[in-house]
Amino acid sequence: MTDSILATNPTGGAEDRRRVMQPALRDVLMEGIVAADNMRRAWRQVRRNRGAPGIDGMRIEDFPAYARGHWPTIRQALLDGTYRPQPVRRVSIPKPDGGERLLGIPTVVDRLIQQGIAQIMGPMFDSGFSESSFGFRPRRGAHGALRQVQASIKAGYRIAVDLDLAKFFDNVQHEPSEIGTPQGGPLSPLLANILLDDLDRELERRGHRFARYADDVLVLVRSPRAGERVKASLTGYLTKRLKLQVNEQKSRVAPIDECTFLGFTFRKGKLRWSERAFEDFQHRVRELTGRSWGVSMRYRFNKLAQYLRGWMGYFGISEYYRPVPEIDEWLRRRMRMCYWKQWRLVRTKVRHLLALGVGIRHAILTAISSKSYWRMSKTLATQVGMTNQWLKDQGLISVRALWMKAHGYA
Image (cartoon, rainbow, N blue to C red; front, side, top):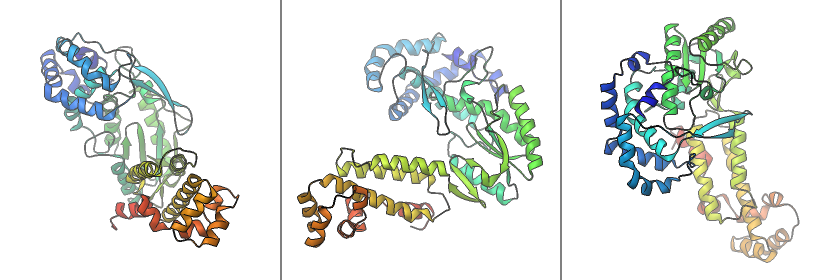
């Protein structure tokens, strides 16, 4: 495992550090990797991440029993340098902008080993990475990259060079002849950062303002003419030096207002979630509030709350408030629709409406209506009965409250 991992690291950043990785040092590192404390921490992370089985079909829950009988042999093979990882299971998932993203799913054993390696090797490399690299690093993230772009915009750099690396993980050039780094293993982010550290250093050497999150790179300049020059020179650098392909159809030079980066747009320097991100949000909410989903309302509220908190935890930094109250109104209407569908029978609807304080005449006229569930969710009776406060008491959380909290107002 030692030789296979080190020999197939991609060419790129931190090359000098890898060159001096002599056998004695590799032995010390591997002893640290297979140390009991490190492997226990790695197993907790692998178990937390869950994930599908690899090519051997082993599930997460099957591993403890397997490890009791096989781990001593695997550990010794790692120390001896004779361990060989199994092939990854190739799967493809649809990309938001069309096409497919290839994933390589390692076996549970190999995920554990990769996680252990990442825990030891990650800190060694991370301290030397660029301050403009934000992806998969401790105490850094997408929000930091977005704030850095905003700072450059404020300083007058409003033209973006948006570079799209074509199938980045599939086209990483290894030594001597292998191509491709499986995206899906715990080591993938570290390997990507090692490779693209050379790009970061080249951008810094040229004095450019930029932000990078994994293979998403945005360079900011002052004029379109400068942008075209930078795009041409960086394309040459990436293809000739790092052996990476640049997707010319998707790469472009444009005003920053016209660009999307990490799910956000920049309107007059202010962050807004992108239209595509919001469309994905609406699609998922429709799934969670679908009237034909045969689950209890408590379960539905819990799953919806979980999703809303996660989505707003990321997109809540948007500085555009106008759509926020409208989202809450839409969510309340969808939940009223779910209740109306669940109540089904006329007598059940009447009984619930009366219990919620609706007058008997309104309750009966509303209950016998043949209009669609969506139409009925906005009637006087359903809104008087299922008030905003009542829905909140049932478990519906407020997007507005989450937005206010994200911006320090609550």
